[in-house]
Image 1: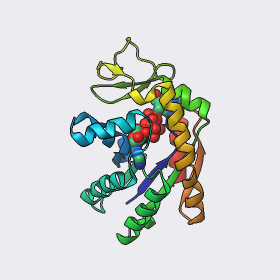
Image 2: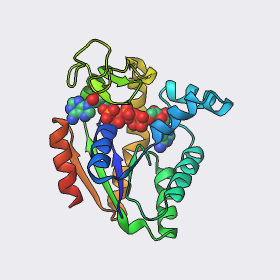
Image 3: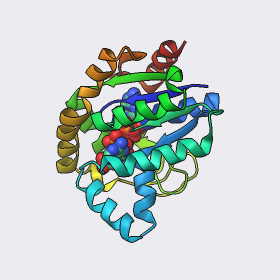
Length: 216
Ligand code: AP5
């Protein structure tokens, strides 16, 4: 049993690394960003509210995110290892999550990977991100370019850009990240959690090796 928390700014490669880990080890991948995008796609009243928040780069309310994540983990049970991509990302979320895990005697399984990346690289990565509408594979215009324009290399599905990857929204996501998520590193270090910091400004395969070394 493992509970891996991927902490890092937008574009750090949390989704990319989570996909690699879950492919190799069959870990269950929980992406709170994807959960929000699924809620948006549902077209419900709540989905429309979430869309306003996400597309402007703000964070969804702590209580809503915690409820969604805790339910998902409870459904999974204490058997499968999980990767959390995008949660927790505020102090209240981290504190509630610690309490939730301690109550279930799962805290001992937590490993946190702190993925460090400069803002300028974040902007470059998100500006070039292209996602396949069919299989969800994430390309990058420069670092993992499609061989055929607008077509996924894996399944030929159509590629699209996320609305929150527009430059002004990325800048506001970064600002909020530094304000609300940066303090989590300090929090985890102070609480004696198992946290490992890595520089992620290197090819995805090298980042992956570093993450695996942290998890040994
Ligand atoms: P979310 O989807 O989680 O967005 P994010 O944290 O901003 O992260 P991203 O998905 O943008 O980036 P990533 O780190 O996964 O990078 P990726 O692997 O795609 O959340 C979206 C929104 O939902 C939030 O803004 C918020 O509104 C809401 N939300 C979610 N969780 C919440 C929470 N807990 N509380 C409140 N609100 C919440 O890689 C990026 C690009 O770089 C890709 O093109 C990729 O191909 C490329 N790339 C990846 N690795 C490398 C590498 N090593 N070298 C070169 N290129 C690389």
